[in-house]
Picture (cartoon, rainbow, N blue to C red):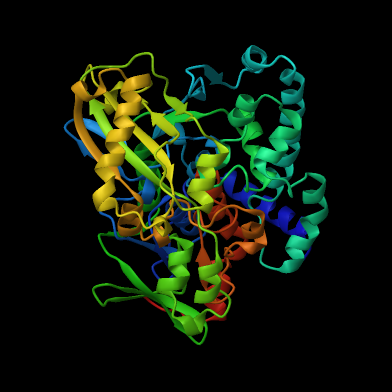
Length: 531
């Protein structure tokens, strides 16, 4: 079947389900069973989609709550979203509610954020990045009037890449080499061989503006100097759909989707670790838990880290494609150091999203991605949800988290030794710039470092975003949504197609609509295994 025909089939299937006005019929007790490994956004979205189609679904997660990296920490009246905070394609969430015959607005209140980001350079200059075309032209003109026209051309290029890379291909599986071959002409025309920074530099000349329009890959684990320029589609994605916040935090979205799955009949088992995806005669038969229990299933969907799934959950003799040697050669994303803290005062001049760029750009990224060296300097993303939602902290207080991109565990950094030193350096930098007197007003504090990404989320090498999004690890060259090695095994999440970030992860679950057979077909083709 041609790529265009598969796109049309996917569109028809999705449109038919989205036209539902009532809740789907209850799942039959004898329906085929799916075990979903991990309750992150990918696993939750997959569960909803599979339940709507008539599968029985059990979601297993080693944490005590849904969300995965998007879990929630609560302490002394503060609420901290542990992970993703940028909502840039709200229609992908809305679609899940429509599939379930409900309205997202009844459960989750999304509000627009402006500016999208406040970008502060090391010399103190500030650029407000918004969705307002006129305001953006004025901001650019303050730095370099000659770049206004270049920015307009860049945005048109971003739109063209968005139309192909997101609208046409973001929800389509790349299971065969022929799937990749069909898009090569379009990708070549869109200059996907360039890096993000390289494409931006073609249109923008001011060095600081080049940073403004090339930092986005860092939000999905990529280095702007090596990530394929396909990711410049984010610029138009944000212009088209805006940047949003869920009142109550990202955790409100997590709870909303988990509640959808529960209402549809899905089962959750928290606090249980999957140690093996069992395989017989090349077919997935379920999952074995750390307790020794075997949870039988007709299909398995892994929302665990893709590199971890293949290296640790599938026996080597069942994965001729994703061998240990191939996994050793793979490039993994950087990691993150995240500091969550509260203050007993409010910093009312701090925007919801602030990016503080350090004195080095390319050199710092080289240290992180290529040299795996923990540098003394850093660039930071500061999240202040209380700028929009005071409920995230006690009255008169602020809640924050600040993250710093850092190398994954190949750096050899002993974070039990260095974590507090690094946190203090970040505190000092914030106090000297945007949060004066910070140390005197701290009330709560906790950190997450690369070792925590490994320990808490079973991310290989503590990488925060799984496989790095370089061209040779994109589309067909990522672990496939339908496993190349094990029949009945499917992957969702940051490590499979189309990649990291909330839109990418939700789109990976949408791909399942194409590659997972309908339950009636499955029941007819193979013996039913009961959980």
